[in-house]
Structures are given as C-alpha cells and as structure tokens.
Image 1: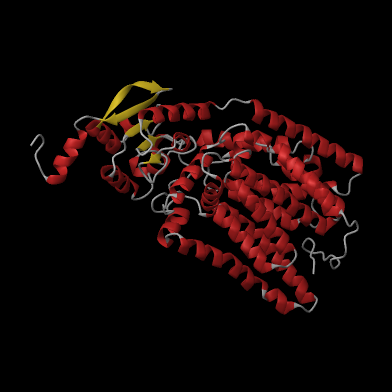
Image 2: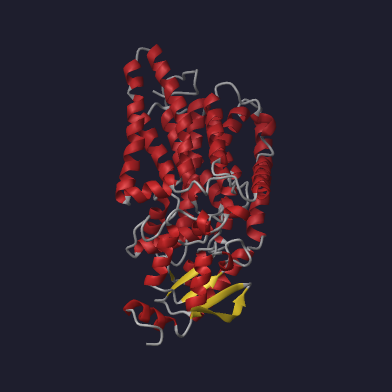
Length: 507
C-alpha cells in the first residue's frame, strides 16, 4: 500500500501514467547533478574534513583501527567508505570519492522525486528532482563541493522518508541507521519517520489493519539498532561510544567566540535563503498535508544547531525537506510560474557555481606549500606531526602522522574559530594528552610543523608541547607563511637513550 502525507490516504499504487517516466527523468537529473558538481573537480580537496578522512583512510588501509590508532568524533561509515575507495582506486586522489558524492546527490534527487511523485503525481516528482541539485549548491563551495559527511547523509534521510511514507518500517530503520552511522545528526530524521509511521498505524487501525501498524515500531527499532550495534562491535565498542557520544561535551558548547559563531550561522542562513530566492513566497503556502515535512525541517534545524558551530555544510541537511515543501507549494501553480521559479533558482545556482570555479583557496595553497616543504625535509618512511587544523597536509605530503590525533583541535578544543578561555590542554578530549605524549616518546616524529600561526593553540600556550619542543627539537630558520619547522636536535636521541637505560646525562 502506498501512503501519502499524514491525514490523507492515497489510492493504492497504480501503473504510471507514462511508461517512460523514469527513463526520461533519470538522465536529466544525472546531467544536472554532474553540472552542479563540476567545481568539485577544480581542487584536489575542498575542506579539512576531506583531508581528515583521507588520512584516516590511509591509516585504516595500512592496518590501523578506528578509535584506536586513529580517532575522530564521527561514526565509522564514511571513513570505511573512504578506505574502500582508496583500496580499489588508489589513495593519491579523491576522484573516486568525488564520483560517489555525485552518486549520493543523484540518489537523493531520485528519492525526493519518488516521494513527491507518490504524494502529488508525476509533475511534482520532476519538480522535486530538479530542485535538489539546484538548492544543494546554495552555500559556500567549501561546504557544498566537498565529499564529506553531510553529502552522504542526504540519500539516507531521503530513503528513510520514502520508506516510512510507504509503511516500510524496517527499511526506514535501516536508512535512519545509515544516516546516524554517517554522522550523529543524521539521526534527526528519526523524528519525522516516527511521525509518518504513527499516522500510517492510525490509518491502518481505522481500516482494520491495526496489527500491521503495531508491528511497525519493532521493525523500525530492529532496522535502526542492529546496524549501530554491528558498527560498534566491528570497531572498539568502548571507543565507539566515547568518540561518537560521550567524549564531545567540551566541543558541543556555545562558549568561546560566540559572536564569530553567530555571524557564521547568520551568514550561512543568508546564503541558503539566497539559494531559495525563487521559492520563499511559495513556501508559506505549503501547509495542507505537509505536517511531516515541517517536522522534518524542524528536526533538521535542531541538527544544524547542535554543537553550536553552524558550519555551512551542516545546513545541507535542511535541503531535502525544503525541496519537498517547495514542491508542495509549486505543484498547484500554473506551469509558467513553476518554470519561472525554477529558472530563478537555476540562475542563483549558476552564481554559486561561478563562486566555486573562480574563487581562490588560500588555505589549500598554504597546505600544499607546507606539504612540499615536508617532503623536502623528510624521507617517505618518516613520521611527522603537523600541529594545526589542516590534516590534509599529511595526505598531500604522503607522510604518516606521528599521533592518532590528526588535529590540534582534539587536544585543545580549538575548532571553528573558538578561542579565549575554552582553548588549552585542559579543554582537550579527556585522557588525550597522556596518550599523545606517550606516542611522541615511543616514536618521536622526525619533523614537527607548528602551523598555529598565532592562533590560541600555539605551543607557547601549551606547557607540555612547549617543553617537548624545547627539550628535543630545534627550529629551522626557514618558515612557510608563518609555519615553523622543528627538527630533532643533535643530542636528543642520546638523551632519550640515557633516560631509557638510567644513565646520567653524558655518561
């Protein structure tokens, strides 16, 4: 049985009115998605998140273990996907992941088209399918063109709503689990899924199918819980729980650079509103039969706010419900008005694409220059430490990190511009500094790159790191854009050997 929006039951699924509906729509959507992803090919990578994932994938492919030899605050699904892509296609570029990001957007567009078609017919399906790739470009290209977490959340969330709308509770649970295992905030789609299934169960009770409706929640729970438990068991259960749930309290706070963070949130909201320039007057009319979509939008907005960082890529989670709400408002309008709205949205999309193709990327250039210097100063087998927030330097330089902590943020709580009293050794992830110093003692890095460049996590503000540099390293005279290179001091290895065997210095 096929279900429409809450409170209204549609007729049973019927044969499509046009036999070639998907045969005609799919190529058009594929072409549109490809065009909107062209800027992603301009640079080797777009954001530190891509760099972090690339470094993680290399470590995992070399036998590392997630949440043990390399750590992050994210669930394991996307690191595993990167690892698989690197294993199959090589780890020297991210083109395989860029292709998978295209596929993720295409799948999202198709699923949204299917949801809209189920509810409102063929024309609505086409509108929704076209709107998704257009609106999904409506942020800073660093946020929309990178193959990162939010991009891969989108098809799971759309699939969860499509399955829930058709009463397929178990499949909806699996889709929610996929979103949750990609990023924690992906689990927000569970709220509208529960809303839909509740209304489906209520309709089933009125029609005499109450038993089937009551079976929905257990199937949903099984579909959701079993994959999450499986992921925990495939990694380290304690590490999985710590890094994805309990270990991020300091990160998910509003203290530190409040004005900076609020400005970022307002700026990204304005960008997304600009992307919807052809739609706001229509969106307010999308009320009847769209309660679940408004619930979806509200739950996604809560997910954007969670953590109080307001990064642009967080806002991508708003796009699927916005697409369906816009479709609900546009579908009863005259075709000329619909065409005008889509044309306006398309023109704004072109502006964002031009931004992605033409704007410089100074931080990427800096990371590439650092990587060039690292390669010149070290051998391929050397381990290095990049003390900064650009883990892509490891990947660009093709050097192994000396620590499981790939950024200074995990050790100091510096992230997204947060500074002031909330940054320092005591604000890092619980238990991280003893592990970090033990790693550096066991396998001292051949090179340390201080890429803090005056930020609050500079070594002179961190007693442990400052003492380590003073005792065992000396700076090189040359710098790169303010980044300082430290190499092992001549007497450092002798001092460590003496300490290991209990000999007095110089003995």
